[in-house]
Image (cartoon, rainbow, N blue to C red; front, top):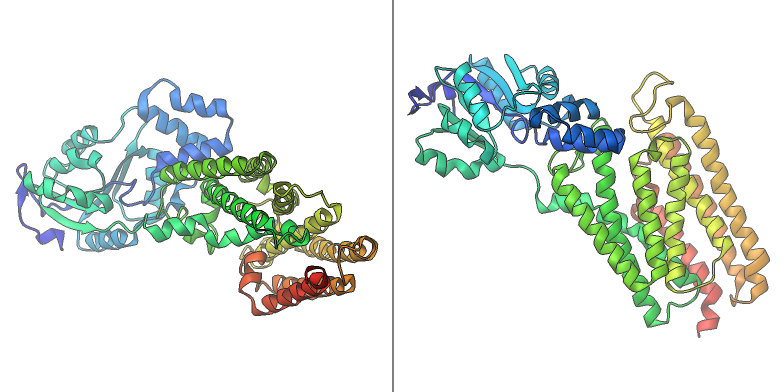
Amino acid sequence: MDIATTKGGHTGSNAGARDIVVDLDGTLSRVDALHEDFFAGLKNSSPSKLVRAIFGSGGKAAMKRSLARLAGRNSGLSPLRPELVGHLDRLRVSGCSLHLVTASDQYHADAIGEATGLFDTVTGSDGQRNLKGPEKASYLTEQFPEGFIYAGDSTADIPVWLASSGAILVGRGKRQGAKLESKGVPIVETFDDDGGRLRDWFKMFRLHQWIKNTLIFVPLLLGQLFMVPEAVIATALGMLFWSIAGSGTYIVNDIFDIEADRSHRTKCNRPLASGRIGVAPASVVAIGLIAIGLVGGFWLSTAFGIALSWYLVTTLAYSFGLKAVPLLDVGIIALLFTSRIVAGSLLLALPHSPWLTSFSVFVFFSLALAKRHVELVTTDVADDEKTIAGRGYRVSDWPLTLAFGLSAAMASCVVMLLFITLEAAARGVYARPEMLYITPIVLLFWFMRIWLLAHRGELNDDPVIFAVKDPVSIGLGAALLAGFAASVASSHI
């Protein structure tokens, strides 16, 4: 609807007002700047500074200013509502004046104003005056005595709408439509909420990543307990609780990596980075998932619960900053993958195997480096000394990731060969240990394929997830399982 020709009136004005006032948080932007400032401050500063910023004297406006400075975010990357932006652009072309007025600090208002180039004026809270609710209504009435159209999204905007000449309802603001019309406020335009759907939540849980937790079954398989129902059930429950807690850590990681994700060519589409889900509800869900996983893990086994706790603490430390330390980050990833195998052994009270642990660390160190290598060879940054966003690697580091990754891959094959030669054949656990030689052969070919694709920049997914989808990898995996089955078959006939 063209605002310039809209009829109707309220508080002595009419809905044809040429001044369009737009809120920021939840309206123009899908996200809440204050919530994101809190988590950015939690990541980038000390707890004492964060506490001082929140509880320091000066009121809410002063707190917003302190948090904005502490966070130091590039809020110009904040995801905007494209339909509303397009609508506002058409209004500007038709001759309307656009004004951004927000309760967020002026720092964020200026960043959005500069990023969009839409607004004639940009006003935010100034550290003393918190432009929200009645305070914003009073300010706008003074600034636009001839009337204004207001675009908002929440119950906090009701006093502003009641003082306006007409309302643009965005997202959850549509719920206020009947109330506003009963008060004589014309509804000029509405925009649906395009986020927070069930599929967005499931995408944020990264259910496809649960496939990695099947590593908990490795001790069950190698310990040849797959014919024991109690062991199978315990391992399945262990995987479930580990996966639930793991989904919580994925959410935490996305919260603290949100700015880097918004600069990434594909990660910008994640539910948190795109603003389809806010960081506040996401953090509550993350805490709930982690709690459920921990309670279930300790219920199964104290040792398993301790292993899961170690995994969670290490994962959170990774999210809080260790991921930006070159090589340490991939070392931690290798340990996190290996911890799943160790946890499976603890759950079934099986003896520790240094062969299996060494093999696992080399395998996943190589795969983690393959993922980093792809990021380096596919980056659009022209400067070789430029650091990749959210990482500690420079573009010029790609020869090192290639060399270290291939070396680790070859080391894993050597460890497997030594295990087969020195232990598997000698212990007599396997009926036909010679069939295990299929494993290093399959691994060698698979690693060569992974690293070829990585170096070409064609490995577009996590290597483990890629393997589940890739027909060649699936075929090689089937050959590996067939070799293992042949090595133990006679002992279970």
